Every structure is written in C-alpha cells, then in structure tokens.
Length: 116
Image (cartoon, rainbow, N blue to C red; front, top):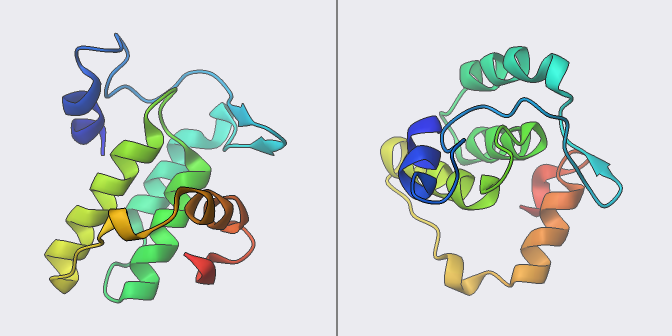
C-alpha cells in the first residue's frame, strides 16, 4: 500500500508513501487515532484474503485506518484491485459505481461492510 501511495503521489506530496503522523477526521468521522495506527495496520495486514467477503472486510478496515494524510481513497482502491486480481482473478469496474453511493457505503462500512 505504501508503494502504491508513493508511486501515485511522489510528485505531489513530500509525505508520499509515508504513514501519517497526525490524527485525521472527515466530517464527524474520526479515522484510527495515530497512537493505534501502526498496530492497526499490522492487524489489517494479517487479515485473510481468501474470499470476496474477507477482502472487502480488509478494504473497509483499511479505509477506517486511513494510513496517509491525503490520497487514501485512490491508493486503497488500487490496493483492493491488486488483491482481488491476485486472489480471485476479479476486477472492479469503478466507472459503474456512483460516487455518492460509494462514499455513503464507505462511511457506513465500520458498522456494516455488506453495502460495499
């Protein structure tokens, strides 16, 4: 994930590919606090990737972790695509997913990841 983020944003952010060192919120949602972030990322890394549901759960958990200061959505979607291709030989056509529906599902994913 860090390599993807670095590749995408190396010419944009000096912190491209670096795990954030600040707390982040978006609206009323608070992403994983910095004091727990490294342990959370280790836990996410160990989550299984054998089924579509397991992979989506891992994706939802990574969204809550939000490891970078900016560019999490783009990097995480590519990361998800790579896992799905490697493990299940599947690919998401992101052009068929409405932005508002996607953002809404991601906001609710900590409670219910089935929408994703």
